[in-house]
Amino acid sequence: MSSPDGDLIDTVRLSLVEGVGPRIRRRLLDRFGDAAAVLAAAPSDLREVEGVGPKLTERIVRAGAEIDAEGQIAFCRCQGISILTELDAAYPRALREIPDPPGLLFVRGALKPSDALAIGIVGTRHGTYYGLRQAERLAASLARAGLTIISGLARGIDAAAHRGALDAGGRTLGILASGVMNIYPPEHDKLAEMVAANGALISEQPPRSTPLAGTFPQRNRIISGMSLGVIVVEAAERSGALITARHAMEQGRDVFAVPGNVDSRCSRGCHRLIRDGAMLVESADDVLEALGPLVEAAPRDDGRTVHHPAELLLNETEQKVLDAIHGEATTIDEAVVASGLPVPQVLATISVLEMRHLIRRLSGTTVIRL
Image (cartoon, rainbow, N blue to C red):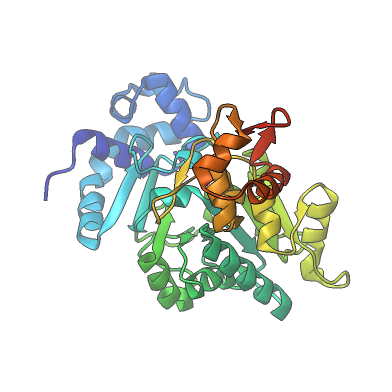
């Protein structure tokens, strides 16, 4: 086992300083360049950074003597926990691009490139039978289509979403407000093991950390930040799930809501989201068709690449025709030859692909893949 390099030690040490949250961390790095320079900075220079007062300055200055970063790294390696920094290739690209990305991610399990195709499912901890059933159903359908399901491992809707993905044989990621070795709620320890075996448990908190009130809303930005969109299934008017939805809107992610009974307190938050512009969801197809094109093609476990989540809805014939159409002008004759399908079947399929916004007609005989 190789020794951790100095950059990783300094990055871990700075991230463990109490009071250095994602926004202050970003200001410090913008001012000083890297974690080592922050830890070596003079107190007078540290206090020039917005949000860094005398107490936080003192904690940063004392970090080298008081924070055992090497011990944390050694513990993670012994437990098989990966530590990802923003510079690591495995750090999720979508998360890196939000305004306040975590400086570190502790990962118990494994992230895959295919996890770029992910959807968040969140909701109340006190879900009704209807809400729990809808969360499981949507998670299972989306997982079968090839999406990774992200949630917060909380009671209620979160747990139902994880279980739906697992029952469908799909991947799921649990984003924790505690450390990945300190499961909360404790009765979800077996569920956490299954999530780690079929995806990953992820936290920006050290592995043995206990959950604090402030870390729950803070972790919600990670759920939305790693997702193409967020589905809210049952949420009261004051709900942590609505915080996740707000993060999703601020991050430019799609927000979906499942409608419920008009006299149910658990449905009020979802109905408010729908009134405010969230997309109403009845099935997995609603979600896949509404999601926009990806920033870059995402690999699937079967070796194919996906440019738009709606491609996951295609049957074999539709996929053949789509594969025959390129990012530059393609004639229908070329698509017929490349797909090996009869002309009438190609023409009918082109109409379907056009309705799903995967291709566009340039003329009566020419199309282009979007």
